[in-house]
Every structure is written in structure tokens, then in C-alpha cells.
Length: 353
Image (tube, rainbow, N blue to C red):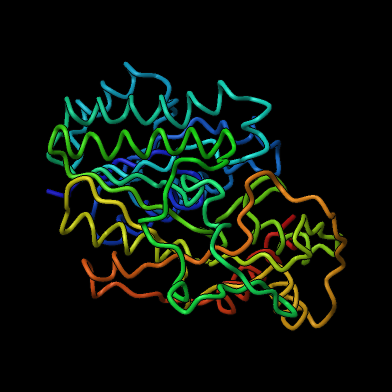
């Protein structure tokens, strides 16, 4: 009998990729989504187009319209399914939106995670519980790493920091944004259910997770929004740091192979930084350069001097801890390949529209 995977936020970037990835490996996939993202970000952030593709293209995909804030509904669902693994992707993902809707942000990110953890503890306590956390749990503490300014990017100044930010970076005494605080609350809960109750849990503290299935908007999904803006010929707004701020980029497929590695060999209360690391990263200016090469034209852009509160100046994920536990995991795509795939996909969507 096929194993059952429960995925929350199943219409989103990582959730939809997880459905496809595990279904292709013979799992029965059940997705939970209430498409609140459309309410958060408007029609441009609505992932229903992704749901339609999943229902059409993934055999036996089972979609459940359910809000993670619905404690009873989640408990009943987990009791019904008894899933062999749970992948929790549902979230309110925007710094800026969290400040204007703090109760929605905390209830979705923190309370929703607690609801699912309790449902899992009651209905599937031995099943691996994978939480898609974020590097924003560190707040702006990574900005204390000494940096040097180069012509097109910032870079770590010390040789010992070359691999990037590891899991020992502190999470207190820093400015997180309300989004970072709600995700840190959820992150700590997932760890505690692993330690206190002995459940197999993991927090993947992601850098920039991306790919062609991303419904990027200006408030969330940097690379997706940049590609859509560039392909359409609109002007992209570079916010702060002169565009030299650096992010690592990891394709959704590679996030799912990391999730699969953990599910097949779970541990308890684990925390891993997950991103493109040294193999796949770039500044905003460097991404604009790569897109200009792909499109054969300059990408119109303008600069705003202000930076987002708590914004990371240079963030590269040190993935060595995860790789030491799962040495067969590797990246399948780097930033240039990711951008090329996203440009092709954005062009297809534009032509279809």
C-alpha cells in the first residue's frame, strides 16, 4: 500500500513541488490549502493556477480546502489519514504584510503550526514532521558579520565566514520583523515537540526558495517577482543597499530532495540551514546582469534608498551540517539555470494569458 504524505500549503511553491515529487515516487499525496495567499497578496499572488495543474497532472492527488487555524479540522484529518510523513509549508510569508496584519500573521504561522503539531502528536506521532522555517528566525543578527563592499555585491570579510551563516547564529537580541518572530515561535515549537515528546521533527531554515511554480509578488518572492517584472518589461524597484545585497537561491526540486532525505532517515528535533549556499547565490545587481544576458536587453530598474527593516545585507546558507548528516544530497541547479528556467516559464504564462 502506498504511503500517505500530508502537505500543508500544497498550492504554493514548495508544497506543490512536494506533491509532485513524492507522487512520482509512489506516495499518495493529500494537500491542504485555503488559498489565503490571494487575500494576502491579491490576484497576482493567488496560487490556484498551481492547484489546477496538480489536480490535472498528479494522479490521485487529494486536495482538502482547510485552514491551518482550524484545530479540530486538522486533528480530524490527521486522525483519518494517519500520514507516514507531514510536510508543513503553509505560512504567511511577508515581512511587510505581517506589520499590518499581526494577528493573521501569528495565527497562521505560529498557532497553525501548533495545531498541526498537536494533530500529529495525537494521530501520527512516529511520522516525520518537516517544517519549512526561514532564515528570518535569526533576525538581523547576520548583519553583524563583517562585510566588504565590492563593485556588484557585498561579501563576507573573514575567511572563516566564507561558507556563510550556520545554525549557531543567535536568534535573540535582534530585529526580526513580526513575520520573523512568528516563524521563530513556530520553529521553536517544532524543535520542542521533537525534544519533549521524542517526535521526528526538523526545521529547514530556508534562504531564498524559488522556482517556476512560485507566485511571486512585490512583498514576497524576490527572484520570481524580479523575473516576472523583467519579462513583462516593467521597471523593477531595488530596495536598499544599492542592490548589492546578496541572497542564496535554491530550486524547489532541491528543497524536496532534502525533505525526502530527512523523511527516509529521520532524526529528532533537528535544525538545518538550507539554501543554495556557496554554489548558488547572487546580489540583486548580479541577478539583473544575468537576466539582461538571458533576455538580450537591459532590465529597467530604479533604486530606493530605504532598506526593509531587519533586511539581510549578505546571507548565504552554510549547508555543511545538513550535508554531513545526508551526504548524498546535492544541488541539481544553480542560479543561472534557475533563472533560465524561470524566464522560460514566465514567457509561457505571458503568452498563455
